[in-house]
Length: 305
Image 1: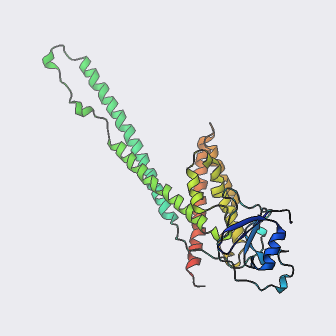
Image 2: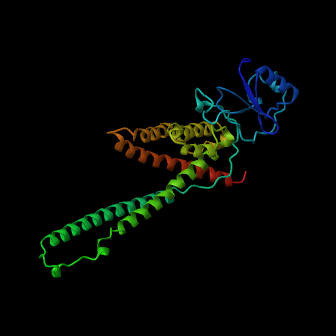
Image 3: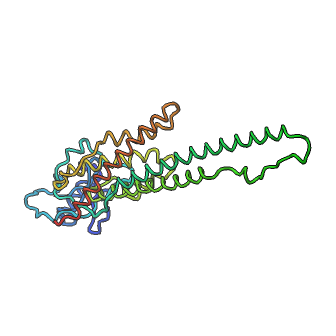
């Protein structure tokens, strides 16, 4: 154990290390590391109070427990989660400090998504019909001109303004696209709040990175798995590790893995359309579950202690 690298949070909540386990014991003996000080090494599910790590204190029974740790745990790497052979088997660490968070309205998100989809569909159909009608009208006018008498006095010229391309369908389509942007923005807001509630439990990344890295070209193909499947893993681990979260809803880690896989497979020829369709449905279910968890935490954060 002494050969492994350990880290601890100092009094200013700054990450210190790496140091050996022997040095952890020395700092604990000198009082630099208190029983409530959070420590971590690779392989641990999350940052843990020193008093709960076996071997830190030579005689744990003689130590006076410090106050429960209410500070956010410090993730060691924004791209990876601390490894855990069985995250759901982490022992209870008492009450979870639920951070304040606003609720997420899945109903608003879904309503705007449906409205935008309908408008885009109507706009596309209307635009296609207008273009077809305009094409037929031009062909008819051309045929009439070809059969006109050569006498110039009998020519009937068409007002060029009548041949202007149709705009009604294009305007409806554009408005529909604008409406569709709103639920897309809401989905990232939901994702930010979902990662926000995990921060006191040693989340693998911050809310800003979780959302921001989704906009990095190519890297986002990997990050989508961290952002969604990683969130599901962290949430289930935290929920099962704290006594005051046992009534909170769990999420399916398999579902949160299937969604990104389907979206990634949508770029594959032949199966792309089916994958995109399945992925879209799964993403909706994932967002519904995210909203349910965030709303449950929002209700819990407003309850008096």
